[in-house]
Image (cartoon, rainbow, N blue to C red):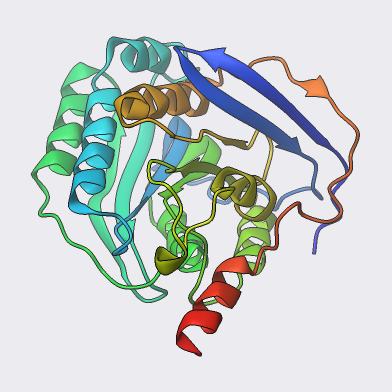
Amino acid sequence: MFRRVAILSALVLLSGALVLLTWRGYAAPAAHPGADSAVIPVDVELVLAVDISYSMDPDEQAVQREGYVQALTSRAFLRALKEGMHGKIAVTYFEWAGYTEQKVIVPWRLIDGPESADAVAAEIANAPYRRAARTSISGALLFALPLFESSGYRGARRVIDVSGDGTNNNGQLVTLARDETLAKGITINGLPIMLKRPTPSMMDIDQLDVYYEDCVIGGPGAFVVPIREREKFTEAIRTKLLLEIAGRVPPARIIPASADKPRISCTIGERMWQDRWGN
């Protein structure tokens, strides 16, 4: 377990979307592998991990996917792309649900301008919709780790972007998977989807953004962008991509480091599942 040194957080308004930016200090990450000259340098290697569990209704899935499609082809994203040192990024997109339920929808692709961004967006848009049981954020993180090793790219940063509408209730504890990911020098950002009123029958919680902040995200510059309004979905995803791609990180204000204990239990999803189903 890494010793948390400090937490810096900021509330900023960027492109009309509320962004909660959380900085955390950890022990020095492992060195980035790969000095192979055949590896293509990029500004960031970005894994988009998208929730397709049954708690995501078909309309939410459609809105979520459309948000990525529109954000990747937006002028703001393409401008930010060119501001990077290399002017290009590598992206892969996979869907996840339970601990053993992950599927790559778009393998690693290079985005270096409008044409390649359009091509990636079209791959996402044209993929068949599917849903699956349970919610395993930990499974998604652990599935993402080996994707970096076979990417064929070398990013100045490596980022896993997890979007979902529920807590971890299947597989390894999310904090263990988080810490294993951070130990490899990978940053985890979160996109908690909070469009529906929480209901006990669906095992929802009304502080999903807090859960993501305290239990899921981590690494240098890690942040959470909560989505509470359907019409703000695309805007929020675009804002998140701008932060991830171009490093447009707003100034953070220092607050007291009081987070040795999370504000919400990181096993709340597992306990809610056990209380309801007994396993």
